[in-house]
Amino acid sequence: MSAMAIRLILNLSFAAHFRSNILGAQNCHISTHEQMCLSGGVLNTEAGKKVLIVEDNQLNMKLFSDLLLSMDLVVLKSEDGSDAIELAQAHKPNLILMDIQLPGRSGLDLTQILKADEETKSIPIVAVTAFAMKGDSERILAAGCDGYIAKPISLLEFTTTVSKFIGLNQADSAP
Image 1: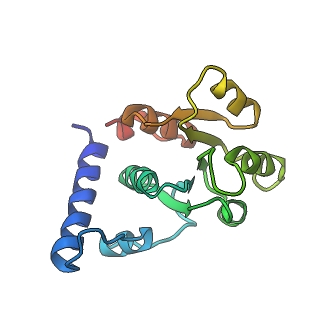
Image 2: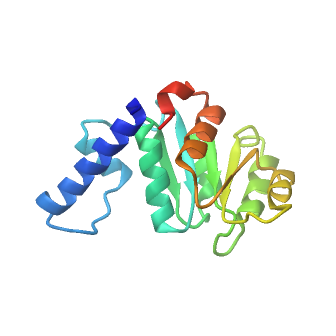
């Protein structure tokens, strides 16, 4: 079992224990800030590799966030895409994971805006989407995304793709 897999199991076990035994809640959401404070860390988006997740599905957001945190990455979240551009401009993440089907504006529209902006055009954007029909990946890449991960995600594909785009040693991030 890799170091990342062990960290993920420990992080999830601790969060579940804390929520059920200390807070007395079964479905209580603990934010990234709370997770870092509880683990003795400090939320500092200026240090470390940062990943912005743009995802409207709460279960997917939680899964992606937990995986990224287990890789020792700083996680920024946009739950519907409405603040994605501002977050990308303010924090300059090393990678953006972009859902394509968002309420309001599509992930492809957001990608095109980010790629046209001088401040954000060099940030790699990986589409994470349920679009898996023939031609979808080509259409998504043509719209400006730098990579593509199909939902439901494969843990290995997810960690390998993230590692590739942010320059992590893949041996450290493999499940």
